[in-house]
Length: 326
Ligand SMILES: C[S@@+](CC[C@H](N)C(=O)[O-])C[C@H]1O[C@@H](n2cnc3c(N)ncnc32)[C@H](O)[C@@H]1O
Image (cartoon, rainbow, N blue to C red; front, side):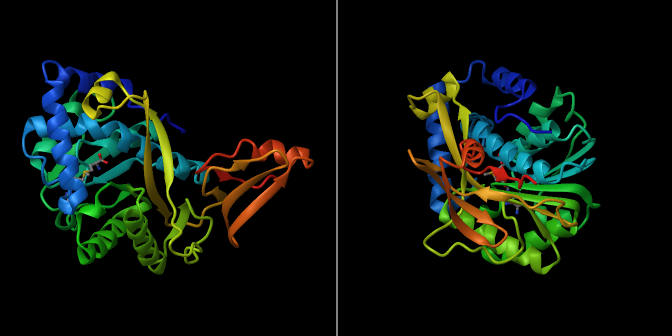
């Protein structure tokens, strides 16, 4: 099911409940410190107290949720029959990806969160407690790599904004461990930066070599056709709440989350969709769009005089799948 990039009402209510009496200034300071550590390569290491966890959730959960929602939408668009009943949320943090997966897949029944940060996990469990879908979720504390060796396979495995916290060899090991536990699909999401793209590319290559198929965003399993310094990422717009504006000192009532993802499946996708790699350039005479096709990257030019093609190209948005009409 295609889902909205906004937090589900139950999650929003649970977060709002926790925010009662929580100072915005304090949250702003904490979230700034957390981002500084994150950008300096310290991962989520600055999240130590309950207030830190809440500040992190307030600052980042809406945007990471939006990125996961967009990635799961891209997967369901290509694999509409996928109906996972079990989920492993690796590096679950406050449980963001589990909430998105519960929205995207009404079939989901059994959710396991894996995370080494006890404070964030406690928040995840508190937020999930009153959820109609996640109240029964299980939590495995400690290193996700080690824990994955012990758990049964799940239909879907998701790792959202996690692998960037690991060193290269740990990334390779966790990638193999996650794939081993993914019965039908694995979705990995990272920040939309050149480094995030490089990590997704390495994971994609490692798992294609292990027999994985790419459902999205790429329409093929061949090496990525982009040539450095060119790179691939997407952007998801989401509304910014008033509290979020206060915390971030932002003016506009929306934010654009840049992200990169890959959705891998055990079986070949039924359709291969051309992917729109950048915002199309809509000119007077034609629309020019950068596309990733089964044959490689193409700069498509659709002239206005080709009425039907022009009308469909006008609907193309960055990140869209263009499924060939026959
Ligand atoms: C940036 S947060 C993302 C949280 C959540 N997936 C989201 O998208 O909002 C990264 C999370 O990965 C967890 N993490 C990183 N390395 C881990 C590991 N080796 N084992 C378990 N958890 C890990 C951290 O504790 C943190 O909660």
